[in-house]
Amino acid sequence: MAVPVLELKNVFKEYGGEVPYLALKGINLKINEGELVSIIGPSGSGKSTLMHILGCLDKPTSGEVLVEGKHASKMGEDELSQVRLNSLGFVFQAFNLASTLSVFKNVELPLLINETGEARREVIVNKCLQTVQLSGKKQNFPSQLSGGEKQRVAIARALSNDPKIILADEPTGNLDSHSSKPIMEFITNLSKKHGKTVILVTHDAHIAAMAERIISIKDGKIEKDVKRGRK
Image 1: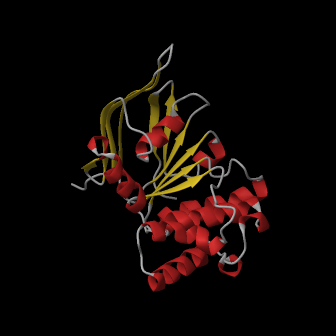
Image 2 (image 1 turned 120 degrees about the vertical axis):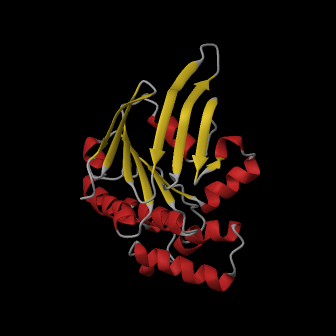
């Protein structure tokens, strides 16, 4: 039987303070290779916390997190950094591009961190920019791009180290409806055409409906987990 690429076992997440807040309450979840999954819920439901746990950006208070069968919840920060660099790609609502770097240099950043050779970096970056149809903009700076183009650069950057898993947190949240449609096509095609495991975190039911599996979260618990099959 195939090992899930991501698995949570009885995960709880509590935030401290004068009044402790339990954001996740015993989450059990398996996500398999190549799945296109949306996680949907209202503000305060725990969906962003769940994304941070799945993406190894935060650790659970208790429970286990496994990435490609490895116990990420037991790793130190150096090991977690390598998992995030090599197994996970992130697309954020705010794009998170370096304003002083060109499009090419933004996409190249993860490869530099991974100490990939210069010739190989150029091949990979050009391929990633071709995938998001931005080959003609590689010398532009973020300030010279539209919102949709910035998000396409962020997708290219997420692909640069060829991760198995892409996590997209409200990827169209800063875009108008005209720009949102092609971005969602790029993201969903990462699963449908390129075999990536894609996890979308959204509050938008229309965005969530583009996935083949919809996980609804409410009050820190999984309320529904519906598989609809690939479209």
